[in-house]
Length: 185
Image (cartoon, one colour):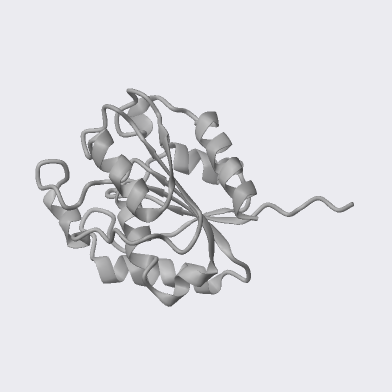
């Protein structure tokens, strides 16, 4: 019996991109089938430009893909889910979704993604959120998961689930991703 090939994973960082110590960057280095979707401007996002970059990456793949999004990348996935390219998405891990509808939670630059689509996603998804994330309340993150038809994981008091959270290679996140991919097969 032949081993199943791991899925192609598209890494979707949020505002500012994910630096060298961010778990997304570390996963990209650890796993050969993880590819970052590069945006023209990480600090001044334009929704249509970010969507175009994601759609191009999905279109270039010769297989269905798994999306691994962080922060503003989660809003990108929610918008992309309403477009034809979503048919090529196998599953999505949505970590620390930024509440782009809340000026008190997120920077003004992120509000180009408002309003955040709250329709069920056309693929399996898991939302992971922290109890102490400054960019989204736990209740709001739970609401996103419910609206999107996604599973929800409470990561405890871990901040924004980024490099400052001290997650390293984030093995717990990898376990969540592996379970999601197994469910999506």
